[in-house]
Image (cartoon, rainbow over all chains, first blue to last red; front, side, top):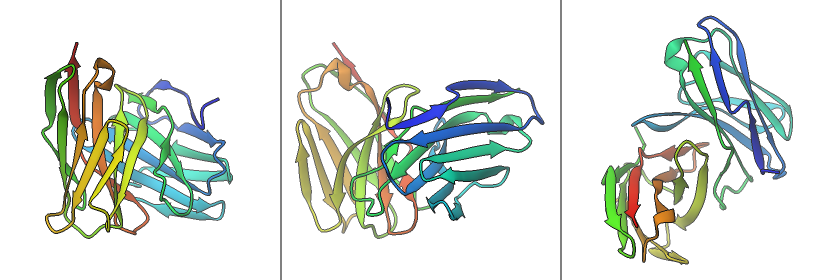
Length: 113
Length: 110
């Protein structure tokens, strides 16, 4: 099994729908992150969490919410999807030192029509 | 923005040649990391170099860091077709985030 698992892998949804992207990890890391990738813009941080009770906004949190259900699970929700949220979404984890880099999931390709 | 910028945006070389990618950034850093991404897949961590280090090696990878110029380079020696991917630098400034560049798309022609 992958260290960081994201579901679904691909999703097409309609404008205005609520959608949840899920992430689970087996690394035992406390820190988890949600990133969005758009062509030509690199990765941008949406939300991050250092433990179950610690949730923080990133660069582009508007229109998104998150839930840290357990140390191993971190989900991202789009409350009312809009077309410009069409992107590739990545979950990542790191240990508290961040000295060994981030471990990324395989991504969710989300299309909002 | 604290985001790094990679140069060139795209690079095409023959198998067996060396590939060099550069990264420039804007603020002081704790470390700089390089990641690889195969098309549409997740990023894979390649190497981390701390601000007090100038050069680091890992297999066919060589990374240099010049904090006075706020720049880093990634050298892949003896490239292989399987090295075809996008490569990103990411800076850790000590804030609660990694700032990623926009990537270099490397194509290695067999």
